[in-house]
Length: 112
Image 1 (cartoon, rainbow, N blue to C red):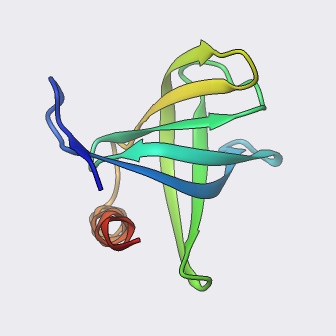
Image 2 (cartoon, rainbow, N blue to C red):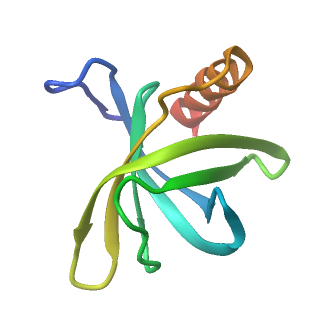
């Protein structure tokens, strides 16, 4: 497992976890995606769907077959790649419970 902090406030964990991403205001607008890296502050994910910057999205992770995590987030940047789209998201505004869930999720990802 690679830990990449760089200039960021929070250490990012490189990973390849599959998830579902949906618009906050329209759950029917969703896509399968893959997390590239994640931290307590945000994440980078890739998917085919085209989301706009500053769009609120819900992230749904399922780990180990039965541990499900829901995290609200906001897309802060988008980059078009050859076969997909890459996004940077921020986890700002999480409740205490959501922060606890995120911390637990990152610990589990480190174990995978």
